[in-house]
Amino acid sequence: MQVAITRLIANEVDGQMGGVKSIPSPAISADERSHEVDHPSSQIAHFGAEQPLRLDCGVDLTPFQIAYQTYGELNADRSNAVLICHALTGDQHVANVHPVTGKPGWWETLVGPGRPIDPKHYFIICSNVIGGCMGSTGPASINPATGKVWGLDFPVITIPDMVRAQAMLVDRLGVDTLFAVVGGSMGGMQVLQWTAAYPGRVFSALAIACSTRHSAQNIAFHELGRQAVMADPDWHGGGYADHGIHPHRGLAVARMAAHITYLSDAALHRKFGRRMQDRELPTFSFDAEFQVESYLRYQGSSFVERFDANSYLYLTRAMDYFDIAADHGGVLAKAFAGIATRFCVVSFTSDWLFPTSESRALVHALNASSARVSFAEIETDRGHDAFLLDVPEFFDISRAFLQSAGKARGLTRDG
Image (cartoon, rainbow, N blue to C red; front, side):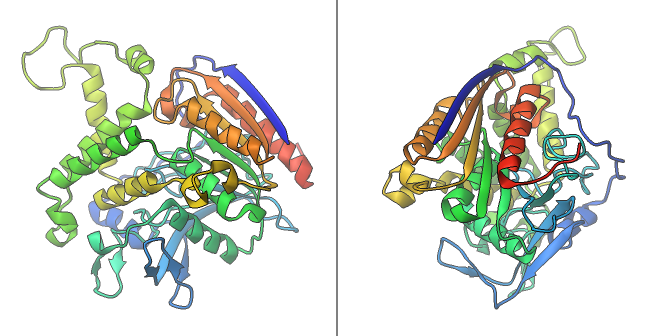
């Protein structure tokens, strides 16, 4: 057993997302966006009737597909594979230009040449989760039994369902043991589920800004978002695709509410304060008077261009159901009993969505199960979203952990 507990202070870098320079793609039409649901601009693994995905709700999902991206090359002994698990509104485009938005990959601060997870050293895999809307089968996909969009006929999915589908993909790629599984937020939940469900297949795990179960407060925020979507008259009971419309207003409000939880009061004050938007005096109206209002409206409007409303319902519900200890008699340590996986758990002081206390509870459970675990609490005012931003201490911790695990794994590095 090896436990290291560290508290670090992040530099104040008002940063833009760094990383590999990508050439933006031109804007695409709504039809092309819809095309990404079933025919994505990425690799696809198809699974037929002979390989159903058994879901926790008791349904066998078949056929289904998983959309994914890979970077780097698998080494000769297949020991350098790293699985990246995305958060709630992420997808497989972790380190390449996004085909819908034209923006750089969502984690190019961590993944890419010269970054802690470098394709020069690792074979990197990132898939869109089951239930998503960027190529993996979900409620926005076509139901082969009806020829229509699944909508709410799609079965309810869980974090363990997502991980089982990822395990099938990893099998398809010829990888028996993953060198590392890495993710933050909902991605961190997947990391923990991987170690609990497939302990022999995960050599190391980097779990960031996450928890072993969703809190009542987080469930409440998710319900607020779901109700916003379902209250939109364009939702049509989840059947909006049949009407050729989308509940943009409700989904935008859900995104705005969620985005507030990703930030901190200090970060909002530092970025916006009470500054007015393009004016000096109030207009005594309900326009976006303050900069923070304009920012949230932008977040909402840009989000609806790339995400499906029903997928938002399904993925938030999957997070709500997540509770590793529940499958082990309520004793979290039992979920990791005898595990050989090396863990690194990272939290951020201003993250009130997944506070450090929850990371410490995980570390204590790993300690009780005699697991090898290091823990770092990084002091920053950037809130939950800190794991996606330019926080040098986080990158240093990630790099050091993976290099140490790589030495233990016998991976060689040149440069």
